Amino acid sequence: MFSHLTEKFYLALKCLLAAFRLSSSTSSSATYPPCHTAALRLRHAIASSTGPANADLTTLLNTSLPSPYNNPDTSLTTLNADFLAANKTSPPATFAYARARVALEPAAATEAADEVVRVLQGTESLTLEEAVDALGVLEELDVKPEVRKDALEAAVAKWPQARSLFERGTF
Image 1 (tube, helix red, strand yellow):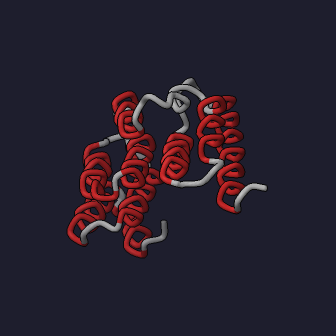
Image 2 (cartoon, rainbow, N blue to C red):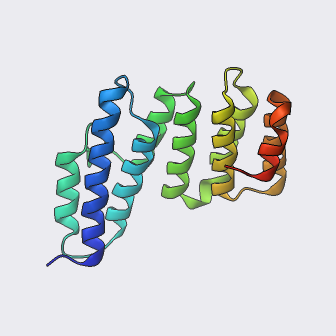
Image 3 (cartoon, rainbow, N blue to C red):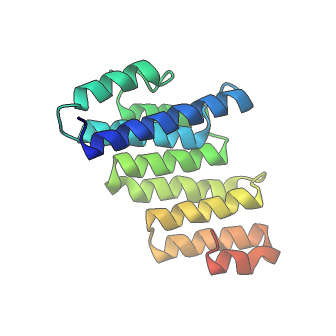
């Protein structure tokens, strides 16, 4: 019988594969950003775990996940950097990159937050929904108050009428 943790990994993989199928049927060939983050987090969690079923889980990931997530020879950090490079102009992709980067390298929270703030401050076509997501990512990353303040000011500068939404932290 499988351990409780192993069962959770199998369930997470099942959900991730369903999400990949849904995203591929509704979008272009680009990976849906939440699938990217989830794939890297799952691979990292399984690689970091110990147990007799770990090798079986790794083999299952290598045969089930779509390319490039099924390549055991590519580091997760490289996959994440390649994802950002391929989607540099996409705010949701940048936010997925930041979330995955911190999951893989907790000490890189500052650099990940800098990417999110760069998008928030420098993307003219940024939508209100994306700005709210950016502030939510910064909240998840638990950034310094001055970084959060700069990001909030950038969001308010673009959408002054949404000031109360941003300030309440409704993300």
